[in-house]
Length: 71
Image (spheres, rainbow, N blue to C red):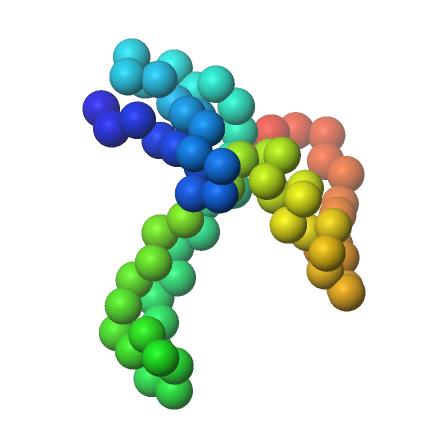
């Protein structure tokens, strides 16, 4: 199994044995036309600390909803 690392800080998020250390944001973006990345697919993994740091700089923060169950 491939070791999953945060693209921002490089921290390991999943060990070789497949045990998840922490949750993360996974982004898969298929770029279309009208971009400088036409027809490329980008994969990103962001740990929670880097996510918090990233979104703290947004002019419009992400919408957050409370949930009572995990999927």
